[in-house]
Length: 300
Image (cartoon, rainbow, N blue to C red):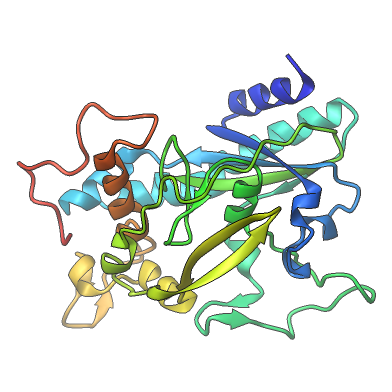
């Protein structure tokens, strides 16, 4: 096995489901505040790790009967437990081999300097330490980084779609000065057929049905919908009452505190996943379809 193959195998043993390697020159067109080279100028590679969201975490939301699994296991459990543990293990492994490794976790604190309630940056949050450098914190675009690492493609929804899991994964990354062989960028538009179920099934109406953005990545064009980040944020933290069984119509407030992501990303993850499975384009099929005729799905 090559050094790259050995490291990928170690990453899987450490808990990642998918591993891809991006060459650093693939980020030459990235905005300064999203350029990983600003974090570690001597980096030779960006390792991108994908952690699957178990399909079963979405079952209770589909049936309208159990909402805790997605929030606890498919969202926060991955971001705050599984990813950090894997990052720690892999970075220690790289250090033991004499290479520096910068963990880039995909956690909520990464967005502390962005006011999502208003949908924009807070320019007064920080300033560059010297001219020509990015201001802290540099926040790489994880999904574009995953495309750069050959893991999949960007769907119309803005989510990463992989051949193995469709939209069912969360991402983290590691910058390292270890020389690694990069993975080829996958062709775009193979998985996403622009069905736009992510548009019609999004309770926040956050995915624009027509307006798109494009990004050039090492000669490959990525195109995805304009996203209303503020609407997405408000809705996944406090879903509207038609999707929120904890909503108290008398007080107009959710009951208790368990509201974070209880909608299960029903457009960009659930509807997209079901559509990809029905098309038979994923490489890890299930014995039974997600949408079952003898079950009445909750608020489809």
